[in-house]
Length: 278
Image (cartoon, rainbow, N blue to C red; front, top):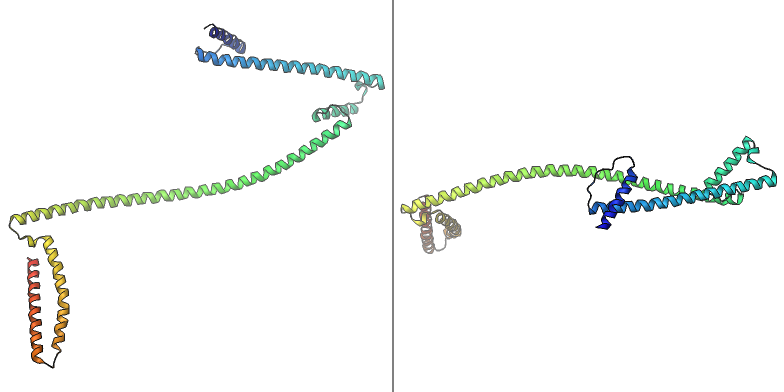
């Protein structure tokens, strides 16, 4: 509990330091928010300490550089009685350009031995940068080509999708129509079945022979077709007997037999047909 109160106090002090004269935004004070703000304050404190150390180091280096510059200036004055103030405007510009170049190239001094490697390194960096730029241009051109192809493909896919959706709508309408027709046909079929059953029940109640039912008539029709098929070879056989001349009595007997057989078949056929017509 004391640790939590200590953290809350530290968080409050840190927020007051951050916002200064501005009001601190309202927030829900609980263990979770206090822990989060405490961690932020600790990170901020560590960062401020690091920034302070870096700043002090830079100040120290600046003092060292100023001291070194003053020492070199005094040494230059003692050796050749030379001072930057004694330079002409052109000389001052050259000297400033030399200093700026040394700073830009990050050399330790302005000697030729320091400038040449720095310039060589800069030239190498330039060539590497140009080569990298060429690679990037090639890669960019490839990406643009791929992007164009992708856009064209996307357009084609969108068109195909529209066509597929249109075809799907057409097919769906056609299927719906067929389903409606199927439902109608099913209803009609059921209605016909019901009508047939009702008619058969009425006919059965009136004493109708079962042989005259629809199924019986269909069977009789099939038998009739079979009998007609069977009479064809008999008629051909009869015709062959009619062509016989050598033995008239035997031929007459065969003809009579064939006629009787044909009459029997025709009588049965006529009976079946009459039954079907009834």
